[in-house]
Figure 1: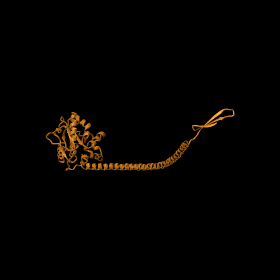
Figure 2 (figure 1 turned 120 degrees about the vertical axis):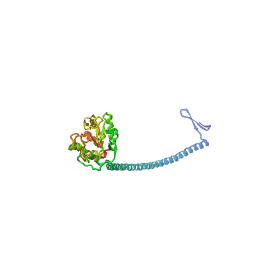
Figure 3 (figure 1 turned 180 degrees about the vertical axis):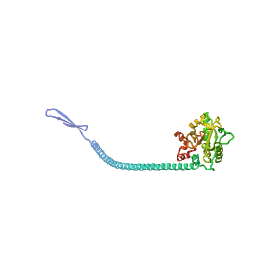
Figure 4 (figure 1 turned 120 degrees about the horizontal axis):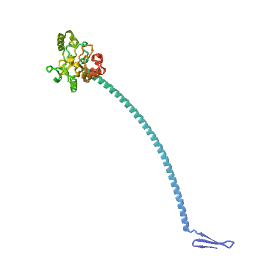
Length: 322
């Protein structure tokens, strides 16, 4: 049996066994057909549109990847180029630093050489302004010209002298060393007094004559002839003490004599004629300024001034007043 109801096909089927089956089938109206066509068309258009979009997106992605690959290659090449440039700059910088160090070394070398030259020039200038006679060996060896006088002489303060009526003079540059030594001795309860200092050629001649009258030929054992006396240099003094006074020949017995042996070198003074010297008899009162450096050397090596060769002594002339 077959009939239509509400756009449905209804079919009733009886099988040979007598059972009935119902089949229902939807009938497509014109509107439904259009709707189905429209839906199919829409899906198709969407698929086509999606396909085109996929194509363009894929193409754009491919181009983008290609561009990125190209850009990456360029960047890598630029990085390599920059690294090479940096490396070259580093090499150039290293070379510049090495060159700078080399130039600085040269400059330091030249500075040192210049300092040496300046030092040499300064030393020569200093020597040219220093009296070469100050460290010569006199006393029967070298003759000091009768017209020689020290470059500058200063009067010794009366508080340091024995005879207040006498004027005693000393080389101007020796004076501060002398005063410091006297003050140091006094602070140790060992006062000193000067009984003789600078003596000119003429004064020495008169003194030697008076000694010869008194002592005869024996005067040669303790008094130098004019021109051979260290006193003419203005750097030599004869010492006594307030208790000894004019009896300075007994100076060896004074306690201050030992103090001088232990300390005078610190002020540049040395004993010119110690015991057993080859020039004059032992004169414990006779002290000569030779500079702190040379006096220290003589003290440390237990040598006398006249024990050294003149060439060794001359090396200390430049520092005599340092």
